Length: 236
Image (cartoon, rainbow, N blue to C red; front, side, top):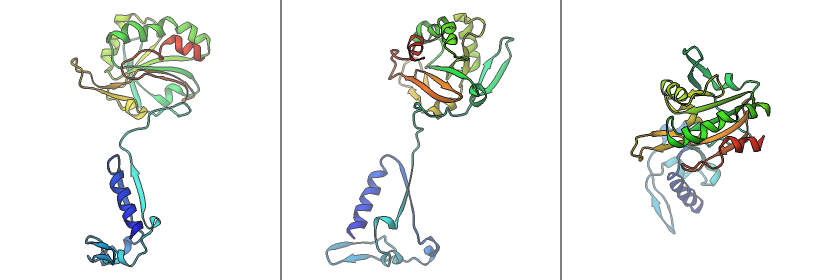
């Protein structure tokens, strides 16, 4: 009985953070179960316990607990980038799509993410820094520099034109539905902001070699302190 009470308390506590499912070793006999109390001389009965449970020794190993988390784990160094399909406009102005797996295969790439196109820090500091340092980064062995934002491809094209990125120094990739951002575990809800940003990406920059993260500079909150082009140059 003591073991059963401890397990029950553990399960109740775990429900606060995740969904727990019990797998019983006697499921084939579930149709034979009838309601009966389990009682002891020193404890009150448990009215919901079925008859068959009374015949099974209650030990921590009598139950298997499967815990499911609803949130994606945040990407870290050593992880492989999750696959997703992103969109962009090519040099001729045609809308294209590309998967992350295609983008990174056999390449050393820098991927930076911004909370939103046309926002002040992204437009004045973060993206321009990588544009200005693109040649130096490529001289260090980087094959591609790409910027991801949870904006549609049309907004990103207008943003690129306004900044004057020019001939593909940085490729702007649209994660319009936030699927890649969510899979990376870097979504941030900015719905409380008066400008109506909704769910966007945290600011970061990373270096991936053949899809595996080698360097990760992930910002906290709305700061811009560790994810700039100069920080990446120091890490290479």
